[in-house]
Length: 151
Image (cartoon, rainbow, N blue to C red; front, side, top):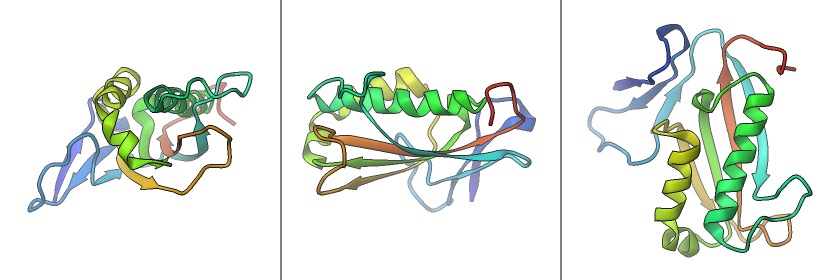
């Protein structure tokens, strides 16, 4: 099993975990090992809505970008950073639409998270609670220490 450290200081590294015999994944880690002593933050499913609760666009990739930005906003409110994300679960109502816009989705992902690849699962669902939502992202973060934004 290989552990792939992040580029954070040694005491704060989460590590990607990849079984030796498996092919290297693209855009995610097979597993993520949280650093010792981290607080675990569960982020509820976030959709692509703005501060007024409106879906930002009918386009999948724009909803994806806003949903991921919303996840990061919650992590920051708890005193964390995007690199503290250890797991993402992405729910989509149409995997074919995801596939068609994958390139744009990837560009948004790299803009928001850089080259940080937590464990990730994509699930196609028959629908989401919010009308017009095409994607919902829930997350887990492992945050070391607390600052004034932490609960």
